[in-house]
Length: 213
Length: 327
Image 1: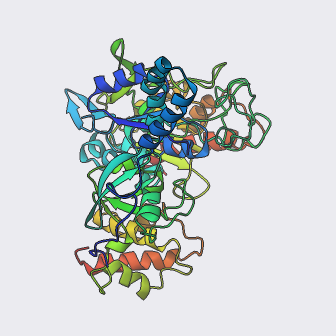
Image 2: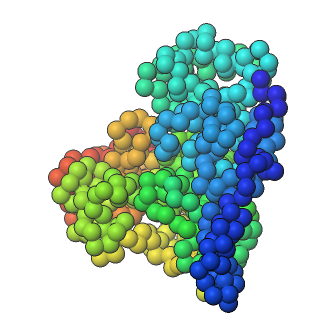
């Protein structure tokens, strides 16, 4: 149900979580007051604390995921994949290798397929992200999802969300003209069950159907 | 991944200023290599300066030259009609690299700046002079199947992993950079460097110098080019060896030719002796074979990669044959 408003998230801005910067400032200020002569307190607060606080600072992020705009507060090191899975509870996007080698984490950002494991979430400011959860229209599956079922394009299913996101992009890019071209442009999505022949069939079938996807 | 500070800049000047001001900062563009290296603990910048908002994405003709902005995506360059028509070798090389997802993220400048994929560089439990100068080279007497046969030193035998750069080396591209001391243009062959005593330095950029774009001069090669990439699987793998071949044919004679190899050295490896031999000669397999033998003079294997001493000349002949339509 992609258009349902998600439950309130403690990581959203204005949530109950107190900013780490404020916490650091307050706690170290208290420690400083206890241990230092008054003149040093001011200096420490202005410089060292500022640096330490900035290092752990959470940054605001506004990003649209499957049609819903989220205003979040995140650490710079958070990847888009971890944001989707851990903070937005969208676990359809899979973490396979987490190093850009398997394609299981493929999502669309502004219509282009990318690897969410190598994308920093903070760099997606103002962008539109589509995940596997954003494809179906209510109970009606996306034509690529239907095709994967029809052609048995998976066994264990772990790579499937990435395969489907990549397959849709492959057709939209105009890179699904032949089985060879599909294989080449799907090479970033690894399937260790070896469902490749049926994945190619599913994509070729959707392409042949000529539906607008 | 160790946390870091993050800022965005909007102009090249702001990017340079921010980096010069902050000794622990690094620029980030596509991030496909940098984020991976940060996850592995190979590098841990304390601050990232996001340069993606800089207006450096354009692909256009400037006079007779083709100019490509440093932030143009690998997929955008590979799919560009202008590039495919005027510099098909570059499009072929880009299409041979990575996967479409990565090409949709990776930029031209980032492609040039990517680090080696040597497993000893990537594994922080192993010795590596490139990662930690003075530690020693694990690959020298280790598992060095992917490693260099040209221009290596006893400090480092890693190879540069890019396909795009091999084509740019063959096509006499130049690199435009801007930095604290102003702007300059670097011939592509002088951009990357050999390891020598300083394997930690991949290229000749100075601290604070930002790549703004590349320029490729007009040429007459568009009809006869081929990028041959030999790898362990047919797609989405780094090259064992690769050959960029561009030929200007006049009937059956070679008027001009460019040859460069990937997967064989710390930088894209231009085959000047082979080019000079072929100029004015007929495009025959025998001549290609002789050129290939000239090209691998001075090559040296390190054990596991000895097969490249045979694979490299064979690949040169095959790439030339395909480029001139005789395969």
